[in-house]
Amino acid sequence: MKPTQQGFTANLHQQYVALSKAELAEGDRYDAGIFARRAEQAAMGKGFDPDTLWDRSFTDANRVQVHQQWGRLKYALDSGGREKFPDLASTAQTQFGCWVQELEENNQPNDIKNCRDGYEAAMKKLEDALKPKPMAKAPEPAKPAPAPDVVRKFPVFFDFNSTELTEGSRALIEAAYKTSQKVSYSIIDATGHADRAGPDGYNLKLSERRAAAVKAELVRLGVAANKVVTLGKGERDPLTQTDDGVREPQNRRVEIVLK
Image (cartoon, rainbow, N blue to C red; front, side):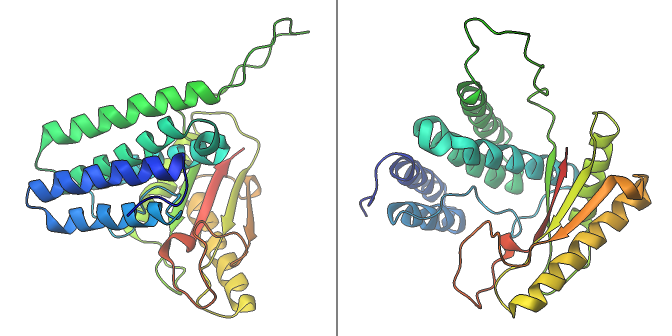
């Protein structure tokens, strides 16, 4: 297939094809197929977001770090990374996909390290490129930005039509709680979302209950209840655009943000 667009999606297509061929050469037809489908989506001008993690299995420690890095990557991409620096953005996204695939297999340490190093190198360049250029003569010193390695966004995913917290969800909420003990913040937003596989009114209530479940867990861990603000958006703000009635795991989530 040939990409229908230039720039970011064309780069994604080329790099996902390379990952697919590499996995096929190792005899891993399953992951070769996943990367081939991602290349196909990119060629059609789709697949703008990093790989979803809901269908991969990790150790508890690895699960927390890959979800944190997913949020870090998504933030950089949504902050203009795709449009302004397509080469760096596409490399960061595909190396992230390579890393999480190798991390799930967990039997080739050198491949895990190489993919992680490639992802970190591309992310550093992308984050540096996205930083505002300093003014020649600033009237007063700018406030220091938060350390780039401190993640303040934590996406917590849910099963279909469910508000139950899974083991992985609880690990991410605990990571958000531990971060809240190390950094200054005014409020913690817990914004619930739902996919489009149901009536709009029902999905709004479902997203509110998901946000409430996350707040309850944060409070149980030790966050003051008045420090957590919940909001339900239903199906209005999806990570992945779908037709009405379509189930989409990436849209069934609560986004925790320390502000």
